[in-house]
Amino acid sequence: MNALIIGGGAREYAIGRALRADKNCEKLYFAPGNGASEKLGANIAIADLEELADFAVKNDIKLTIVGGEEFLTKGAVDVFRAKNLAIFGPAKAAARLEGSKAFMKNFLADNRIPTARYIETDDPNEAARFIATLNAPIVVKADGLCAGKGVIIAQSAEEAVKAARDMLSGTSFAEAGKRVVIEEFLDGFELSVFAISDGRDFIVLPACQDHKRLLTGDQGPNTGGMGAYAPAPLATDELLEKIKARIIRPTIDAARIDGMPFTGVLFCGIMVVDNEPFTLEFNVRFGDPECEALMALLDSSAIELFYNAAIGRLSEVKPRFSDKKAVGVVIAAKNYPYGSSEPATITIADDAENENAHILFAAVSKNAEGKLTASGGRALVAMGLGDDVKSARRNAYDLVGKIRFDGMQYRTDIAYQALRS
Image (cartoon, rainbow, N blue to C red; front, side):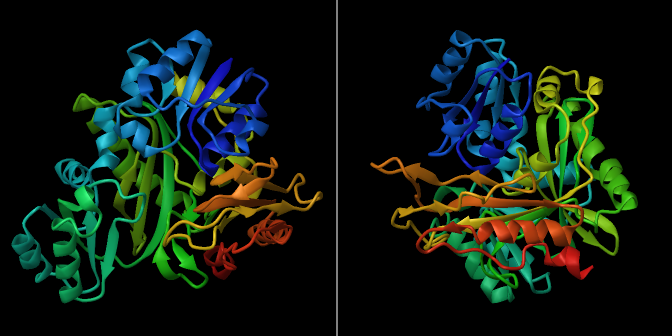
């Protein structure tokens, strides 16, 4: 069948790579894609959702996959479904689970799903009063979408109050911060758990661990993610059963009862405290770079999995995942995440990729000479596979060593949690 992927990052490239390897995939399109995605399919320059849906009708596209939250919260799924097109992702109403942190926290509380104690408010005085009841550190979140950067971990009550006031005034995160969530800090370890759902049934994928901080040793600012690995050994069978029973199943059931059945990917950001899972956040799409690791491990038909979820027949699918481990290292441009960078030509050794190492491209473009350049942000992901985390990590960093561009930066400790444990 013909397929369309909406987005242009490494996450979408990884999904495209999985589809391209699937014998059921005929033509593959990206909207808009990136400078390297034409290796996998055709890039199309259509941003308007109605026009994009019309393109899907005219080109006999049987499956559309939405990569990022921006398109989902704008109602991409609703537009495509109105034209009877199969599309993988949640409708606009269910996408509010990511689009509004206040909505998400209230949903958790209403359905007795474990989460940190919190308030959501647009009143700086109310925020300050609640902050006074908490022990530092204190979490302050902008309500709206901030590309994964709208969370402040304040180390004192004074810092938390200032962060809340800066958000509410519009100084930080503009309109996205005009309402805030203040919550207690949970001290434990984090997991990324992804469930694919058709609105009633769900399948849980191998658990991942992301690395949010820019610098080695978990130093520096938060980013969209500097690396990930899967499966995470800290996600024991006992813990995953708790997450399924206490978080995922109640969420899928409550969303359906509330008239917003959840289809697509439910990304559960989990904090584990004394072996008990708490919900930090929901995202309504694959994480990036976690998706890259998961797609590298998928050992069965990607089209069958996504299509059956989109049409409400997930129970007919039994996806298989490799027994290997996957470690992905993000390579970013010089000024990431502080600002834009000058385009830098990327050089990749001829023998860089093999059966245990491959590259997923993101913020790359082609220059006048047709060469790939790092055009700012997170440029690519070096993915390594191995029989254990140590060998997968070695393969990832061997691949990093075969990639060059001016100003490239990356962490040197991806998957340290797994090796330490």
